[in-house]
Length: 293
Image 1 (tube, rainbow, N blue to C red):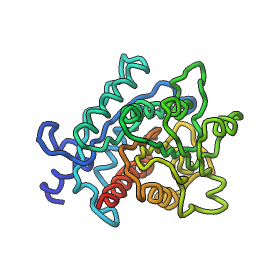
Image 2: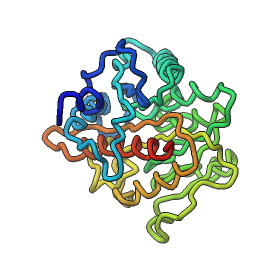
Image 3: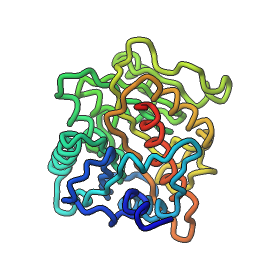
Image 4: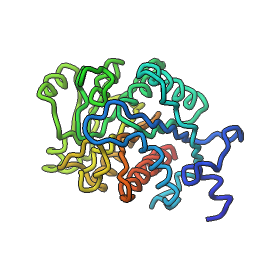
């Protein structure tokens, strides 16, 4: 790979493009090393760095295109230390608004899943209809968990509080109240058991779901045999090809305004899951770029 090529692919070489070079990249990556409410395994604070480190070993050609040619810049990580949850989420909203205001698509690397509502809030107040497509092993629809409304287990409930419709994919671990909450709040879903029985349908999102979408991908949507590096692993999840097929069918004929990949908790000495997460980020970028062609 030439030095010139590396200069154009900041996701592969995060220090390559200075923040003030005047080039407007299509994607700006925002690391958010947040870990406060994890309820089983730990390590999400190390997730963004692990994804960026693994990304250095990605091939530029993703099998169909070279997403990096659209321009990718990595922003400084959002400061987490010393901030209360509401302060952090406000800082996330600000960073996402700045990125979108510069004409780039924000790509958030978590960190725990509670960061998602802060990102969505940056778009929810705009003059547009926005929908959130949520990949996860868990519904994250609790109003509170372990005494906190800002828990990772409440991430999608806080999105719904913003009046944003949600469609969930891959869920297979439920709170006893989830069916009623889904019905009352009109949360669409394609759960893991249905995918196991019928595969990925050609059309996933319902008619009338907003054209502008934000994708939130909790890494535990993958089966735990593929993705052990997460705090709350679950069997019966998505494997790579089904996840990519679902994402491609979600992105088709829609405009992705931003996305996040969250809940990676790296395991020392086990680098394959970090690479899977990095490849996922780059693959979603490729889908977006090809959809704009």
